[in-house]
Length: 193
Image (cartoon, rainbow, N blue to C red; front, side, top):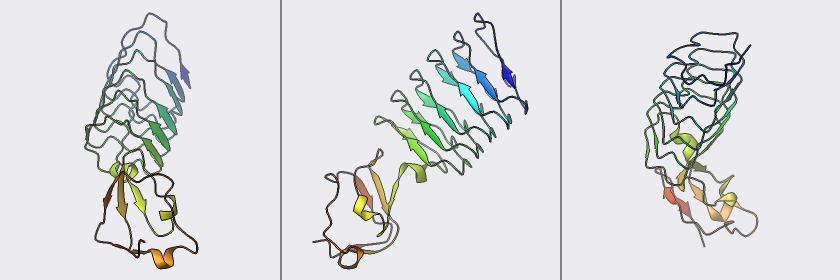
């Protein structure tokens, strides 16, 4: 259920806990700087991973199919998110990506179907994810347009036509000055003033 290492451990091999379905909690030893590829691949009962700020890189598929994992705090020492890092982590609900990350590789959050919150750093330069872009974008409908403000990503997509004459019963004012990028997605906003 829980594995403890001596403090002088500085490397854990690729796939060391592959398919270890009884593992529930793991603390990365302080001297480890790299989480290897496939380290926790298919650890379906892994619920908690404590990652120290000494970790500078996390390999691809390190958390593949860790379906019991609900949230992860990544260390401030990472500069990129590896391909398929959290692929098929169906229990994952939230993740905070540190400000130091500038690139998110393809498939990093693919098939993480319960992921509700991805907080992206402002200096993100590349995000190649199939499935994460929906989490980066605020989808605007008539029901939620009253909450229009600048999201973390600054990206907005209309999901339906919005007529301001019928969308509200009272006056509408955005909560902040809008400075994002609005993609009409084939839809329009009418009677704005």
